[in-house]
Image (cartoon, rainbow, N blue to C red; front, side, top):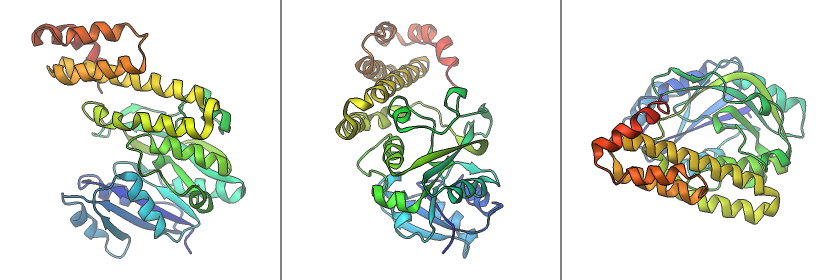
Length: 307
């Protein structure tokens, strides 16, 4: 039985999948298996994986989303710990060794996770640290229920028994499935934060994907409210504020590029999350102006939000 089963969900990741796999093969800890869960790719992802024949196991399924791909990989995994590396992210060589050591040291620890460097798709550093100073510690359950916490799947390793007790990632959630998963995992044990940046996390441009990902927000809130009730009021407020800000930023980018219909949708949804932010009302009105005027009014603000 390997110590860690590394599960890489991928959909149309032909340009990045080899880099992710190579970062696993370069780990200082060698007691692992690699499972790539292909989520219905239609590009050359499978062909790219052919160069690693004998060094990983490939699972294929129709396009069901990252949660289903992660869960499929976990069902076929043999490791006592599970690691989920997104296909466009990269590990530093000490990632597995440090997280495994933390989990081995305390059987009550359900998740060990690290800091990360945030990069853009070209590999340039956007933020040197994912975790702000006020959250650079092991979070309590009340902290996770009070704020959006900076944990991403690529930077975490989960104890297999905790994963199985939870039942895996919620496959009906179209967004924030990881945030909900961390809440359930924290019920199974403590979290251990490792401050070293052991992941290069790729952050894609927010436009236009934010509109698609926004579709699952209501379900996420309902799940959190249903399980945790008023204890999660802080998290819901943090989540809705974050969504409003992200949609507003995306709307400015869309407006600066002349995409007024998409910008209008972004600002309208931002107002739905945060109706007291009156700037979004004026931004919404700008989407009805002539395109060249709207671009001139939004371009400077939008430029500050892109890479």
